[in-house]
Image (cartoon, rainbow over all chains, first blue to last red; front, side, top):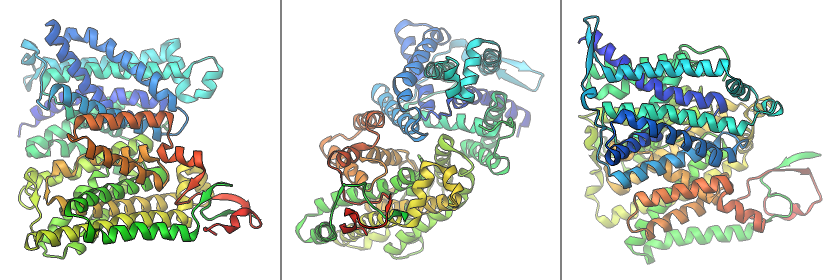
Length: 289
Length: 346
C-alpha cells in the first residue's frame, strides 16, 4: 500500500468533513442545537448549484455567489420561522423538527431530481492537480476546499473574538438570559448562527459536488461525517473539529485501501474508539459544553 | 400525608371504570382473536402491518416520550431482529416463535455495548450516535458476503414447508401477541415505580439523580428493553415479508414512521401512538402510491404539530374532554377523602 498517498488523499477528503463539522459545531456552540437536516441541506446546496448551472450556464464556483446568500437566508428563515418557536421546551422538539425536515428534503429531492446521481461540471478544475514534495499529486479542488475550511475557522475566530456581534454570539452561548438583559436579541443571534452554518455547508456542498457524485439520499451520511468530525475533535473547539475531520478522512482512506467495503466502517470505528477512550474528543477544550 | 398516588389523571378528569376498561379490553382482544374465523387473509395481513407499526411506535414512545432518549437509530434493531430470525430459523433450524425471542435477545446483546458508548453523548449528539450505530450494523451485514449474502440479502426459507394459510395464521397470532403485549408492557411499566423514575429523568435528569434515582441504570434498562422489543418486531416484520436486504432493514425510514406516528398521535401517552398508527395506516391505504409525497406530507404534519400542538392529537382530545383510557400520570395529593378514591386506579 502507498501509505503516503493514502494519507494525503485521506487528509484532503477530511477537509470536506471538517467544513461540514464546523457548521454543526457552530450552531451547537451557540444554541446547543443539533440540526439533523444538516447533511440534507449540504446535498440541497449542491442541487441548487446544479439547477443554476443548467439555467444560467455559470461555472459551479460562480454559483456560490448565489447559493451562499440563498442558503444563508434559508438558515435564518428556518431558525426564526420554525426553530425559535420551540425554544425553551427542551432538546426534543428541535431534534424532531429537523428530523422531519430531513425526511422532507430527501423525499422532495427524490421527487424533483429522481434517484440518479449527479455531478457538478467543474471543467478543468475537476482533474487539475499539483505535485507536493514528490510524494503525491494532489487535486487543486480539495486543496481549495482545505484552504476555505482554514479560512472559515480563522474568520469565525476573528469574528467571535474581535467584533461586537461576535461578542454577542459568545454572550448568548454562555447565558442567553443574561445576554438578553444586556439588550442582545438571542433569537436574532440564533437566526444568524443558523444562517452562517448553512452558508458554510453551501460551500462544502458545491465543492463536494464538483469532486464526486451526489444523490438525494446522501444527506444522512454527510450529517454523520460532520458529527464524527466533531466527536473525534472534541466539542467546543473549531480547530478540534478541523483535525477531527482530517482524521476521519484518513481513517476512511486507509480503510478503503485495505478493503473497499471498509471505507465508511473505518471512519465510524475511529469515532467510536475516540468516544470509548476519550469521550471529550482528542482536542477538546476543558470548557464543558 | 402528601404522597404521589399511583397512576391518576389530573383532578376531575374522567377515566374508565374497571368494568368499562375490562369490557373495552375484552372487546378488542375478542375481535382480534376471532378475526381469523370471520375476516379474510387480506384483513389479517393489514392487521399484521398495523400491529407491527403500533408496537414500533409504542416502543419509540417509551424510549423518547417517557424517558427522553431521542433515538433516530431504532432501525438498527429491526435489521438485527430480521437477520437474527433468518439465522435462527434457517441456519439453526429453531422454531419461529423461539426465533422471535432470540431476535430480541440478539438486539439487546448488541445494544448493551452500544449504550456504553452512546450514553456518553447528550441530547442531539446522542441521537446522531444512535444513527451511527445503525449504520455500522448495516455496513457489517453488507460486508458479510458469504454468511448473510451482503447487499443481496437473504430469504426466510424455514416457513416454506408450511402451507400459506398456516404461515399467515402464525404471523397473525404472533402480531396480536406482540402488539397487545407491548401496550400492556408499557402500561404496566409506566404505572410502576420505574415509570415514575422515567418521567422524572425525562423532565430533569439532574433533579432525578439528586432524588436518588439511579438514572444511568434506569435509562440503560429502558434502552435495552426497547432494543429487545424492536428486535422482536423486526423479526415479525421479516416473518411477514420473507425477504431481507441490509439497505431496507436498516433504513432510517422505519424510525421516520415511528416518529411521525408518535408525534402526530401524541407523544408521552399510550393512546397517542394508537391514534397515530390508525391515522398513518389509513393514510397509507388511501394514498395508493405510498411514496415520496406521503413522507413529505407526514413530515410536514409532524413539523407543524411539533410547533403548534406538541402534545399531538391525543393531547388535544385529552385536554378538551379531560379523559384518559390508560392513565399513567401521578398526582400529589392528600391521602384520603377526595372523589378519586372511587375510581378504578386506587
